Each structure stands twice: as C-alpha cells, then as structure tokens.
Image 1: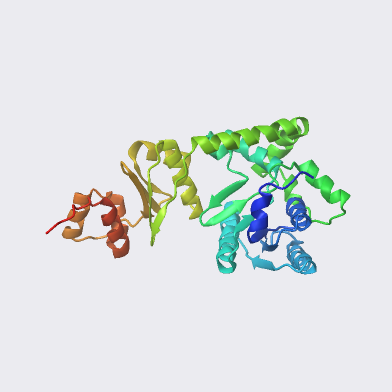
Image 2: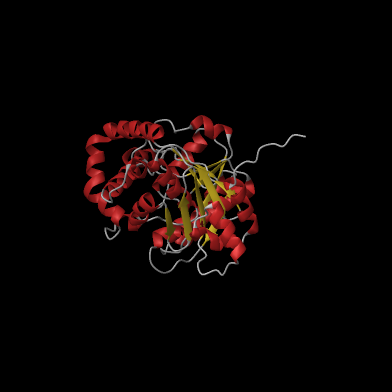
Length: 338
C-alpha cells in the first residue's frame, strides 16, 4: 500500500474517522494504526439493512479492542432523497463531535474510484472544475477540516490489502443495485476505466487539484448570528462556488438555475430559505423572511444604505445583524481634531 495522504498533518492533530465498517473505512482504520496515528471513530446507524445493528456493535467492539473511543449515532430517515438526508445527519453528528471533543481533522475513506465516479456524474450534470473535483484530498466543510487520506488508492489496491492481512469487514449489498445513479456509473463506466488507466487517472487528479487551487480563490465568510458576508473575490466563478459551498454547510443545495439566476440578477432566494445578495464589493447571506411589516423609518434607512429588499425582513427582526450590516455599509467618518 502506498503512503496515506497528508500523513504529517495526521500525526500532529487529533483525528476523528468516519467509520462505516465497509471496505474503505476498515482499510483506513488499520492503516492509521499501522502509521501510529492517534484517532477515534464515529459510526452512524441508519437501520437500512438487517445487519445495521450488528455493524454498529462491531464498530464499537473494534474500537475497544484497540483502546479507541467509538461514538455511535442512530437515526431513522423517511421520505425522498435518502442520500441527501443521510449526509446532513452524519455531518451534523461529526461537527458536534469535532467541537465537543476538540478534534483537529475529520477523516473519510473516499478513494480513487469514488473520485472518478463523482467526476463522471458531475460532468453529465454540466458542472465546472470545482464541482468535478468535489472530492478533494483536503477540504473545508463549515468549521470542519476534512482529510481524505485514501484518495490516491484505488479500490483493487484496498481490497487486496484487506485480503492479504485477513481483515474482516462488511459488504453493503446496495453498492451493486443499479437503481442508484452512482452504482450505474460504477458498473458501466468507472470500473472499466479504472481497470485500464489507474496510474494515468491518479496523475490527472493530482494535476487537476493543483490547477483548481490556482483558478478558484478562497472565500471566507464572516458570521454575525444568522447573517453572513464575504469580501467578493476577483472572479464571479470563485464567488458562486464559495456561496455554493457555504450554503451546503447549512444543508442547502443550490440548483443550476439558481446559480445562473444569481450571476445575472445578483440577488436570489435559494430553496425558499436563504437570501443571497451580491453587491459591488461584498456578498450577504441571510434567512429569507418575506411578508414582514416594517416601520417607515427602518425602510428609509435600508433604502439609504442600499440594503437588498429581500434581506430587510430578516434584518428587521435581528438588531444585532442589522447593526453589523450598517457598520459594513456605512462610509467611514473622518477623524475629528480639536
């Protein structure tokens, strides 16, 4: 097995591993042990399979056998878009653990095949470079620093490692069900490509990640209550991507039409929940509160400050956020000397 990515960082920080008990997370668990990384694990039980409870118990027993802590979260999800709901649930759980126990990094066991499958699906949705590289070796998700140490390892290499070392793991039968989009891409496209071009694909992803770092500027949102703002980067592409990533951290997914609308009109309500308002030098995001009755004085102040009408309903009920946006928008007054 090749070396884990960002190994130096992992040796310095306090690490939490998102652990399912499947092929990839089991391999990463034992590779962390092999490299003397101090870590604990977090397991989410969705109760979707007959073996779910057994998998949760096995995760706990595995952690205990190596004197590690295992955090378990149990949830029952219903309704449509299970994968989206499950993602929100687990990352809320991970973020809670990261803050409560002061972990430095969250690790997930995504590997090279996952990366190719994601790229191909995004390519078929009309995405740009940052979206194509949605699975990066190191990334930010809200307040979490996320590292994926296995991204240079392909599935065959990982399965061989488990077999050679006789490491037991669980198999998720749903991985072969082609009613799921990812599985169709895996069976029909990514697996044959990876079998023929593993080394070339590995190099290409390294180059693409380097290129993306130079093309997309980072956007660091500041927060006051539920109001967020950022100084606009030099490119609209970087700004829209930054907005998209920030909203994802809030559990909101922007549609392609919303992104295009935002580019043209500079103001948009996303998923009927959040307002995004792009100004000349700054962008503001707040909850969307329509139909709020406001007094004339407040509305006149907002007009003078050129505050987006879509933001005003929220600001009217949030004095702290309104004070913050006033300070950001009001021109600096010259110093007075006696």
